[in-house]
Image 1 (cartoon, rainbow, N blue to C red):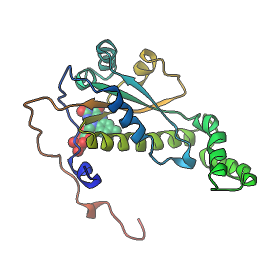
Image 2 (image 1 turned 45 degrees about the vertical axis):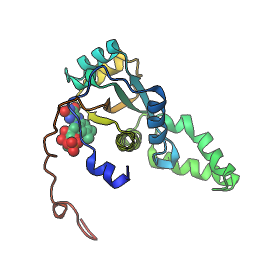
Image 3 (image 1 turned 180 degrees about the vertical axis):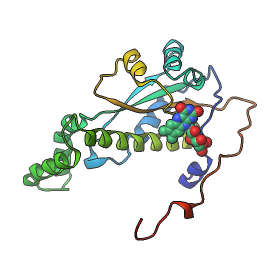
Image 4 (image 1 turned 30 degrees about the vertical axis):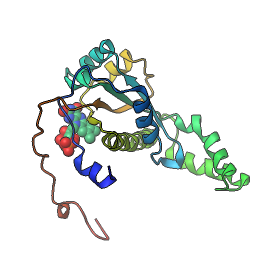
Length: 209
Ligand SMILES: Cc1cc2nc3c(=O)[nH]c(=O)nc-3n(C[C@H](O)[C@H](O)[C@H](O)COP(=O)(O)O)c2cc1C
């Protein structure tokens, strides 16, 4: 499927075929494709908790204000934004840039300083924005990749973050921008037409806000 078609055909699916699984190699391909997403300084501040057992999905549904799709989808992915990804990944990221010829070894410390200036201290609000925006890009790419792989998705931010963190052992310093349900459209369901979108004239400004 071509990318424009995937964007045009992706919908948030409310009714998933229950009991239909996603093969491990397909799930791996989905995650590996999304992992090609761009990120600030290539720091890749996302982590994903894959929830696929019926028991664990039932718990997730409870945390997601009883939204049925959190249990009925084949797999639900908890998108975790990690503000500490800078500390976790910057050394190997800079080293890879040196190895691949993007920059000379002596530039490493300059780049480290730039990243620290831009994204603040691990506890800062700026660092949370950094982690969340990049994880959201990962999630979007994953939803489009899913479409290309013949799967349907539904993003959700209707959930109790403390509940998800507690039940799925996610440390307090992480942020959960969304859950993404992944699966197949329930047989016999016809989707309603796509919901309204604003005319681009309403929000596109040229040269100045
Ligand atoms: C970050 C995010 C969170 C969302 N959370 C929920 C949710 O918790 N429950 C829900 O039913 N839909 C949720 N939606 C789906 C939106 O309602 C949906 O994307 C929108 O109505 C447009 O429909 P479409 O995705 O089919 O084009 C969410 C969408 C996004 C992007």
